Image (cartoon, rainbow, N blue to C red; front, side, top):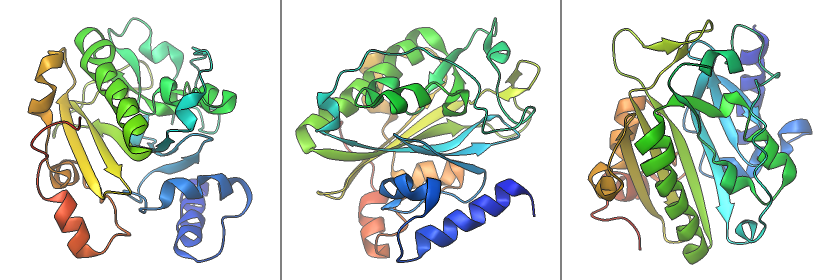
Length: 255
């Protein structure tokens, strides 16, 4: 059995048991309260997030954070320490050279600004395993950044949120960048769960320059993200509760 699949198998056994996590996975328990969205890929446990990495596309499948009001109180300086993730073998990971001159930003899925509460969390957010090739002006440096800021404001108001982010790929041949053929997503999703009110927001945005004032146009049901990605969010909730929060699209962004 390949090492990555063995680790994934062990991880899934651990999260399904009543015992606490052991070893290096112990600190990831907080991110799996509502299950993991999918079982494909290589699981990477980080201080501030958990992700599943696609070795073929060299991008995450999904990234989950748990952000709290308390964590937002700390304001560490952004590190900008972009680097390949050495927990992944060469040929199965993105390298800095893949992005150089590509015309795409190294787009964080778990944002650096969400990690300002801990130096290790901040540093690990700059692993390329946490990034996708993202359109820059008007997307990564526009509407997507503004959405990330809104999420932090919602955390301030609500106290705690679970945030799931990742890429969506068009069917057919993939556009790639670099010698490692890092896949360029056609769209990006973000699914946000309020664990107290059991309310959710989901957005799918094309990976291109967009107008920030159009953000509400990209609201979709959580089920639409599941349909386009094959993922399953909030799997630990009862089925009727999943239906209640996943089937309708929010009529407006949270205030």
